[in-house]
Amino acid sequence: MSEPTSLSQFPNGLHGTIVDVVADAELQGRLMGLGLLIGTRFQLLRSGTNGSRIPFLLAIGETRIALDYKIADVILVVNESPLTIASKPVH
Image (cartoon, rainbow, N blue to C red; front, side, top):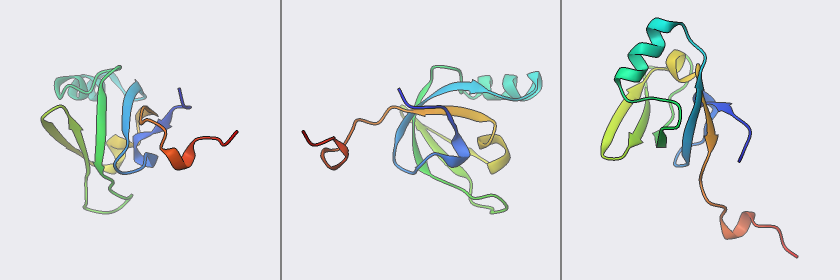
């Protein structure tokens, strides 16, 4: 498993798992209501940027969730995407 990183730093197109939410109880509750729980697997379809009006877009099953940068920044995730042939070590 990879090291946790903020969703705001996670690369487009990859699959990941939420491992922590570093936020107050109110925001954690709002995210839980959206289905963003620890252990939730997702695919990041689009990355936003800090200060941009373009939201992050997550796919969780058939559901799509848009998040702004400040919220994406407090969600810690790990990469669950399989290795590609080009990234496998050569023996």
